[in-house]
Length: 300
Image (cartoon, rainbow, N blue to C red; front, side, top):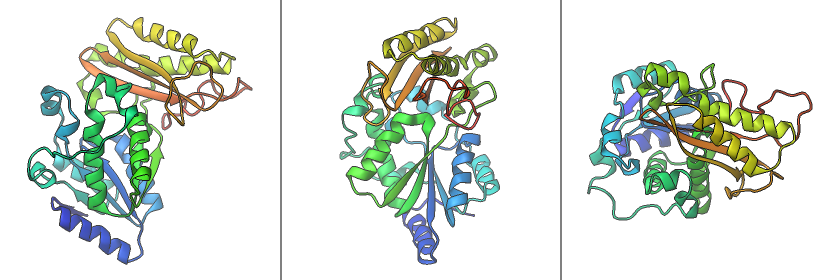
């Protein structure tokens, strides 16, 4: 496995793999790798002949200097993890390599979706995300790029950017990886204290409850939102940020479930902000598990 901080060298490695007839699979990360990232690398390994990942903590997407400073930087551990996952290359640039002239004056406009939900809670976040993703995709070249569904709004925006701006990239969505109690894996989980960790699965519980209600025939989105909010609000250490139910294609809010829909939640558990989401069932129950696509600990 090769590790480089040079954009030019990284592109050369990926170009060489393509010249040898190997498809390039790319997993962009900010490091602090865990089983969620591992599932993306595993999927890329199964589908591509050359697997590369990036490790770069992108200050443009942080709305808090405290959060930026607190993000773990553990390159040696990440390198060992990537080697175990049989990765071929790591791109780990310094900030000077990514932004040689300081914060860029020209950034990617993520469009109206970026101002809702996570964008409303974290203004400017998605502008920073798409800007760095665009730069990383230029650094890797034509590839299959793997993104987790836990960050579903980010995934939707990256997919739109790649399509609207004709990137030579296939964006591959990958299921969320969960702990046995349903908590979605995240580097932020390490910040949870013991009581907070016990409370954190309330987000998944809210999503699961909504899915169960849909399977029982509920189609009123307001009823589902109210129940999700009630579930999270009933947890003493949780402070609700938002609950939402959107059309899974357009990301517009829905009033009645009559097509593919996604439920999303965000809350602070203690001082740690967590997000989660799940596709909701399309049909009332016919004996299947209560939470389609979310019961398994490797799906969301």
